[in-house]
Image 1 (spheres, rainbow, N blue to C red):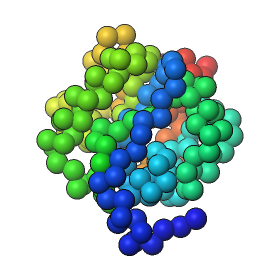
Image 2: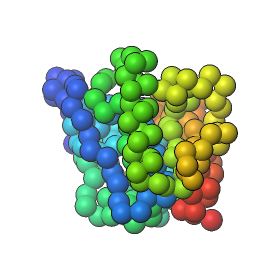
Image 3: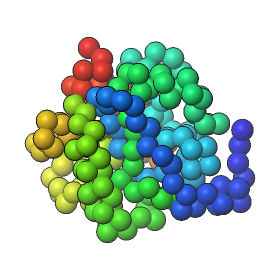
Length: 188
């Protein structure tokens, strides 16, 4: 399935529901839904996004997920049964994350913190260093575990899987995601 630019534009400002199961152990936080994600209702859905290939390479999931047409119910169960949840800092869809304001990121950061406090996962992993820094005013944040914890939840920053983040590879993403997943007890 593919979308024309005009078709995708119809999803500007749409939202995508959180992927959340009963007892999440690892919550990935994206910046915001892209238009393809909004069109399919599936996080990290753009065919060029390396999120799911990196999860597979890291051993977090054990089968390929073809998300470009949207999750199947089996895909949702496959992720949530492993304790994986996905949300976003900002819920509205845009063509590029650069369309978001710092105010939106800060307000979204407060919302995400409330979700994490309610869900109580072992690890929350933010996919993107710049958005994490902007949302939480932590200028010295680096990729990996952060000094801050939110209650019992460890806070991590992992690289953004977007194809626009060209210096990252599926292998480097898998290594970072695998570290967060091990800290969450999702994999050994």
